[in-house]
Image 1 (cartoon, rainbow, N blue to C red):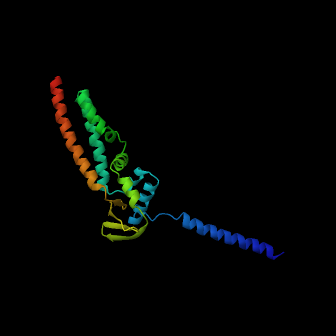
Image 2: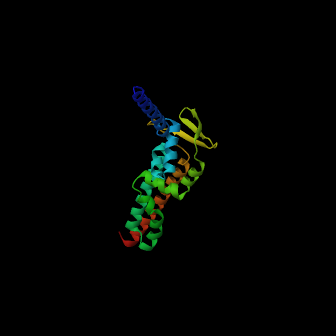
Image 3: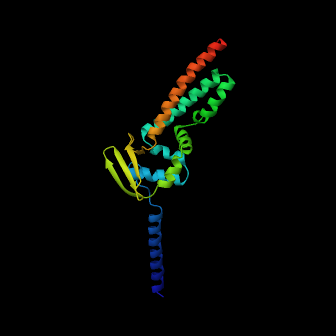
Amino acid sequence: MRGRPLLVVGVALVLLAVGAAWYAVSFRPFPPETTPQGAYDRIALAVAERRTRDMFPYLETDAQWAAYTVRDLRRDACARVRASYPPAAAAPLLDAWHEEGDAPDGSDLFALEATRRGWIARLERDLSGVDHVEIEGERATVVTSRGTRYPFRLRDNGVWGLTIFTAELGAEAERAARDLDVVKHAAEDYDRARGD
């Protein structure tokens, strides 16, 4: 009789230990986002859960600024087109640019571009567990178990940012700036023709 309570307590302690171990393995936190692996893990989770916008904080600063720049320039171009262009000339430009110009935030613009350009599909194919991380100063490379290499750059806020989309977003920002310049000149011509 006296051994029975001890047995129950022993079983309860074993179950508690097993439960704690299972919880620790199943719900272990990500490494901090201030590490390249932590940033990579958050990107991988966002891709796996199809939350593209949630990748945005883990892009390098230049990519983030480029996304905001594209959004702002497209918004300005659309506004100028609506104000000055005749409807027939405005329609194709607004069709091409309104989604970018109407994006509420840089993260929304990034999500739009990532879908359009197939970036998410590419990441879905390539993302896998981290094999190792190579860090050299403010640059790091996350090497996956499949051998894919993802470059990161340390941002001013201490978070590592993925750099693979920066060139394309920067090129899109330059294209948007050129388009806005053309729109402004054409709008001035349309305004003069109307006598404004």
